[in-house]
Image 1 (tube, helix red, strand yellow):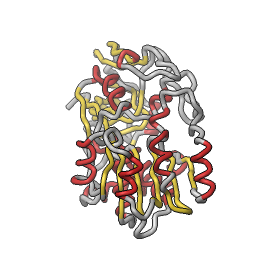
Image 2 (cartoon, rainbow, N blue to C red):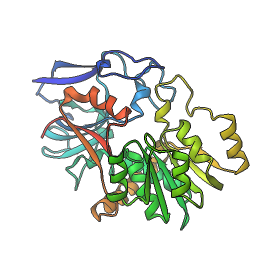
Image 3 (spheres, helix red, strand yellow):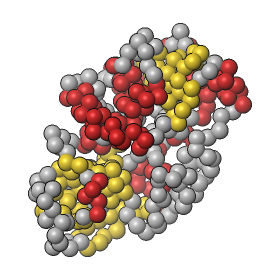
Amino acid sequence: MKVQRVVLASRPGKNGAPVPENFHVEDMTLSSELKEGEVLVRTLYLSVDPYMRCRMNEDTGAEYLRPWPLGDSADGGGVGLVQSSRCSSVSEGDVVTSFNWPWQTQLSCRETLQNWTLASGWTSLVLLGAVGMPGLTSLFGVREKGHVTKGQTMVVSGAAGACGSIAGQIGRLDGCSTVVGICGSEEKCKALVEKLGFSAAVNYREENVSERLKQCCPNGVDVYFDNVGGDISDTVMSQMNKNGHVILCGQISQYNKDVPYPPPLSERTQEILTKNNLKRERFLVLSYMDKADAGILELSRLVKDGQVKVLETVVNGIENMGAAFCSMMRGGNIGKQIIKISD
């Protein structure tokens, strides 16, 4: 059968912004005859996420991330429908999801089955966002590194993204009386406040972030969920209260630069951290996968009960994977960026 896949055609370079042309769609042939233990799956949805920018480099800078080889299929989060199966643990009609899904319209394999989970109760793209890795990242980030107590103030940068939009809601549910999101458009600000229940939102493209934060957080900031790094994070940390916590989730503003991760702080910001005894800890969700099953159950309940709202941006067609990834890196998405591959 004819199958399409997306391969990494070229690398943007450590100091370059990715472009859609870094990716190429090509045809391939896939046998429909399965061997014992194999399954044939049709891809429904694929995910693009900021961490993938590191995988476009020859050296990801992280031992837990392997680079995408040139000319091979890219991969990431995916959801698919089992078309046929010769595997006892998976049946035709099952919806399955994996964090290591090749960017292909269909696939047959056995090796990755150990990484697949049955998506019982969910047939939606929410599996790639709120009830998937971004949701776990948000939940564990707040719980393990935020140390939220009742009545505190939380600020979230990249607040309209896949992780930020969930993290702010978890912070509110865990007791924060004020949750402020920083994002890049009025549309995103409106979504954060009106749809997700944030207390306020700051448009960093149009407003003075420092002044707006002082207005929104008159008693200072206790917890900061950091998705972006750079000047925005320096500004937030300058307004944090003593003994506050910085959850270092991502640094998307720095991903197109040849700098170590996490990027070094300015001398002034480092002085602020030391003076105010701020705990700034790098967070990696893979360190907490022993809690993943319980976390997914909790996120499922929160979403089904309406306590956590889900925002998604959906693009159609595998041929648009590269463009969707680049748009996400520029902040073109609201909520989780998803690519619909088939019905």
